[in-house]
Structure formats: C-alpha cells, structure tokens
Amino acid sequence: MGIEIVKGTRVVIRFDGSRCIHSRNCVLSHPDVFVPNVEGEWIHPDAVSPEEVALIARNCPSGAIRYERLDGGEPEPLPVVNLVHVRENGPLAFNAAARVAGAEPQLRVTLCRCGQSKNKPYCDNSHKAAGFAATGEPADAASEPLPTRAGELDVTPTKNGPLHVQGPLEIVSGTGRTLGRVQETWLCRCGHSRNKPYCDGSHAKAGFEADGA
Image 1 (cartoon, rainbow, N blue to C red):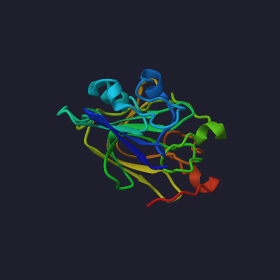
Image 2 (cartoon, one colour; image 1 turned 120 degrees about the vertical axis):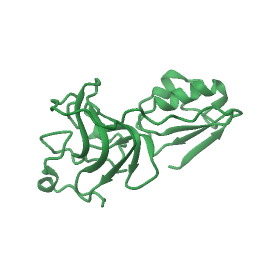
Image 3 (cartoon, one colour; image 1 turned 60 degrees about the vertical axis):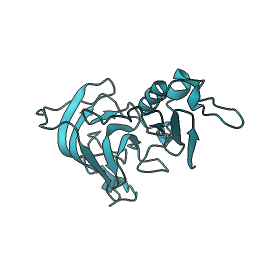
Image 4 (cartoon, one colour; image 1 turned 45 degrees about the vertical axis):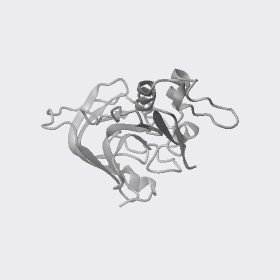
C-alpha cells in the first residue's frame, strides 16, 4: 500500500496505509477530514483549519498521518521528551525523533512487540488476531533522571532478536507511569520475554525469525 498525498489550499496530508494501526483517532475526532468507506476521495484537508489537521496528525500514534503546512505555519515540533508507551496487549508506541533501521527520523511510530506483524518492525495490528496478551502496566524500576531527555533516537531491529535502542528514552506505561529511563536498552519484539517490555533472550528459545542488523 502506497502513500496517499492530498493537497489542500493550506495544508498537505500524507497518509501511509502500511503504517496505520486503525486507532481511529482521525475518523472519530474529524469525520469531515477522514471519511471512510466511500468511493473516490476520502481525505479532505480543507474541511478544517491547518491547526486542526496538525492536531489530528499529532494524535496518530503510528505516524501514518503526516502533514505539511502551506500557509507558513510551523511544522510538527520535535518532542521535548523522548517517550515509548507500552500499549496493553499491543505495540510499543514511540514519540521521539526515532531513526528506525537507519531511516529518516520519524516523530511517531508504533513497533511490533508480539512477533506476529507481517510488516516488521512496524505494527500491523496482528496482535489482535494472534490474541497477544501483555500488560501495559509492568513493574517500574529505579532510574535516575536523564541529563538530556530529547534528541535523535536510534532504533535498530536486530536479526532474529530485539529492538536495540540507543539514545535518551523514557519508558512509560499505557497510563503514563514512568517505568524506566535509559540511554541504551533492548526491547522485546518476539512476544516471548518474561520481562516485557525488555528482552530476556527468549527469542532464541522460541525460534523467533525477523530481518535485522
């Protein structure tokens, strides 16, 4: 599925269907901008103000929706704090200037942690069909405040193994509780770790296979 680019008079909307996890924030908050199940054009950038389009995009956890202002308005700001939310029975939702597998930085991205996605390392909602069960409220661990809380984050999917994350990152639960603060960590993406969201080496025993560095 390719990227749909729809240009309005004041803003451009880019929609990447391969990254969409169907959170439905876009449709529920602005059904006048995103009109599903219709023939022909279904994205309408001019239905609301550029500021509203920007808000819709920033509420899209997967980064499937991006925007470009044509009216001189400010682009999406860089996060003040690099975060990854551990979603209940679901993916890892990053809000950071994250370079995934060396690609250009993405400010919002959801990465698979169930091991079943057909679009690894990205989530494609396969956790639902697989019945993946993993708490979004794991126990927190003592950690010191980071000297720098933002900046580029390198997220490297390792071959047949976890996500290797390098850079300042605060790991938070689904309800926003701080679980840990790290400069480097390995996050489970096989779905088998007994210490989720962290890797504990279970991928080797489980025979997990996935492309990576």
